[in-house]
Length: 459
Image 1 (cartoon, rainbow, N blue to C red):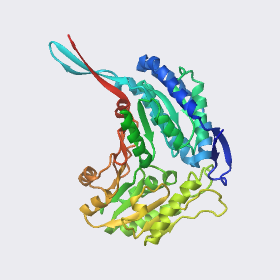
Image 2: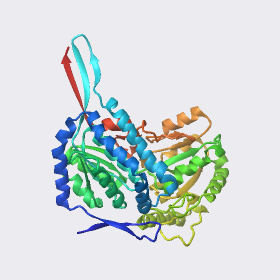
Image 3: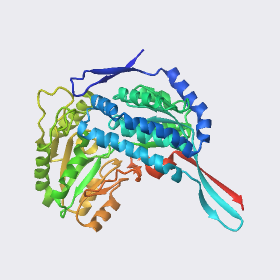
Image 4: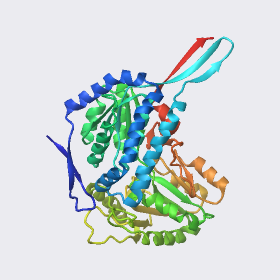
């Protein structure tokens, strides 16, 4: 039987373990199980479903160390961030759903007079095929699976082939929580396995990943005439205006680009700087990067670990080399200890950028930041919107009116100003253009996973 092989990206790609790829017949059986369990699960109240999921939350809370260990081994995310910002953030979102879902999925009165009353109900849809990527393996699981289960959908879940052991651990932990049979089902494989899944008798596609795959799934969902909730790629702009307080925001600029070795969908991937601040930004950002350590992600003083795989390394390196061949300059390159054996890519700042270069036009998933200057407001907005993506965006200015005016003109679903963060369980996660279809997280994402029904009755 074919197997998924998990390798360690910071230990010479040594074998972590293997997981059997789910055969097609078992995928079909999992969907049937989910279909059969839907009636019972969907007939439970939201609070009854939450009581089941509370047990899962508690098991995850009690196994943070085990989750952290396997995520480190498969993804190479530094321990300095994965326990607090990966697992901690995932649990924070999970807790929000447990505490708030009953309120946001409750029926609402939309109209009432002396004779009639109209109510909207948020009803479960059916079987959700949930497919998520590797870059935040715990958070992506929480964001994809938990709101579906709370909303009353049953789930067939596939994690990325880059982190099969993380997926297996999640399944094993959930199996201890006595969910009704067929409510949560996990399968293992690559894109071909995902393709088999979404071609089954499902009722909803919930996908996080690349725009290319998302477009493919959107067509499949269209043929089935079912809902697709798609969170896709990004190439977020960051605009630094003339009045920006560079010392105040420089660490935020670093974090927005280089967190998790730059493997973040809404990360700041194109920095657009007013010409008067161009040199100072380059200098200060170089100083920040020089202070950061690239190394073994199990060491607490390491800021950046490896990329997830050799495949990701090769893609990133090709993007950078092609841009350099077309005239880009390497303003700064971080130091990778030659004794490190794995998918380590040095942090880089690129200048002399042309807008047709790959590092500008494509999503760059790694610790590389192209920087370009602008003279006028209109030029900055044009550069920010010069992308097929529209997920995140970052604005740096001390002028609140300028910040809001800029945000209104950037074609992205989420914008932050200076050191603010939109990553919060109460906030929606939403993209424009080719960054997605639908809304995730918070009350908005919950309701996205339901069918709206209006019932009007006489009083």
